[in-house]
Length: 529
Ligand code: ADP
Ligand code: MG
Image (cartoon, rainbow, N blue to C red; front, side, top):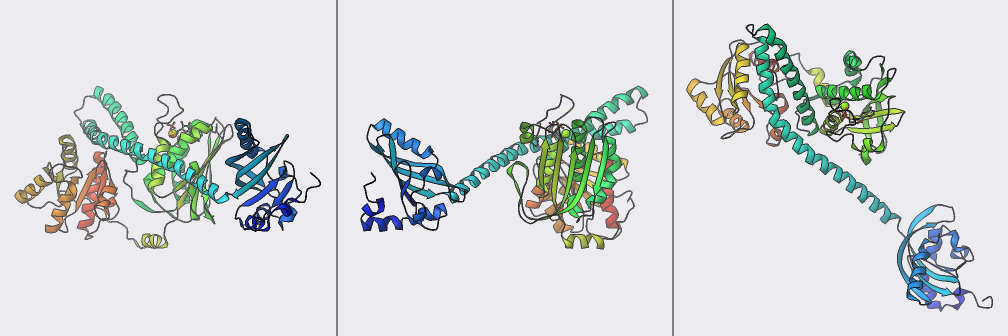
């Protein structure tokens, strides 16, 4: 062996040129040391020239795995040499860093030694693309699953909301009836409490399905949290403490009620996770992300300015399994009757709806931090709020309202609520009916119409009325979907819509506020009460 001339001198000059030209690294070794390397191999290894590689041990660069396949190829074929298909491996560069590579080899069994010709391709880019694709797959599957459950949950909530509106309404009427026998009052209160809880479940479901309808506004979170402090404090358990760490941060664009819902859900979870003596800390900060940051479940939080609000408890923390599932509806680790598994599902939907992000940091036995990254309100939005005039008040007694609703029981409840509040009420069962009623009885001061109805739905009715009476206010009630209205091009819909289930009280305040504003000469719909 030692008498043989060096490998590259044995090669025909033309082949040597070809090897030098190859874009992939080529290495030849005798089972122990590198005998030949091309320019691409030098680049891959981070060497100044191919000469630097010659004589080095091949094991410095490649660990044995790539040999396994070629070895087994030789053993199974019984031949002295074999060509193995490409295998993935890791190439160690001279500076110790590692590069993913694909190694194709032709090997010769020379006694007990396996010498080989290797063609090595740097696949860093391909691996990165594959990893991104795999991550996207996981995200997509997660999103699709949440979409599907969301559609189901939203549908259920929609149906149930109609019934809850009726139950809440009539329970309220009975409780207000002075003729209600004393011994029945407690019974009715039970109905009322249960109905309230059911309505809360549908509310969470709607939030999760992103079909809950919301009115984002400019909000300062430090102020908002200070306002919620007494309520949140009461939700915590005995000997548990609420600590606030608030710094002024840019105003965000968020629905106030939804923010309360988020804060309540995090607080209740912290209460359940903490022992007596535990502390829940709510912090608000301005956070600038110079580059994307990792969020929950592989999501990426885009670079930008956020107001970050975090809820940190020193409670039980959670397992990896819980961490993976906690935003799914009905996922709960709590005993029956203690958890519905809807709290964080609602939070998830609200965050999605508001274009916000969440990151989670939890460790078993150490506690949990949920950090929300909320988009900062535009300067324009902040300026608009400052310019807004205070809203007028005063209830227009005796005004006429046309109630359009296909569900008899809901229509009866709405009618009764408005009549009790002093309105004159006309009724219709769908859009076409409504037009007939107006033709017979004249135009009302306000039309309150359900969205989804046979014959002619609420939108079509509103379109029709807008032609003849452009100034007549039309308000909508619905078990869903502000989005649907927006898709159909109804402007400013969030202010014109009352979401089911509603109580008689909310209904009356909603209608009163709109009419009061009209009487005071404002033709637009400002914020509802
Ligand atoms: P529920 O509270 O009704 O169980 P949630 O959706 O609010 O439903 O929470 C889902 C699950 O996530 C909980 O059952 C609990 O296992 C886990 N979890 C949520 N917040 C925390 C927390 N702060 N600490 C520990 N575990 C939590
Ligand atoms: Mg909960």
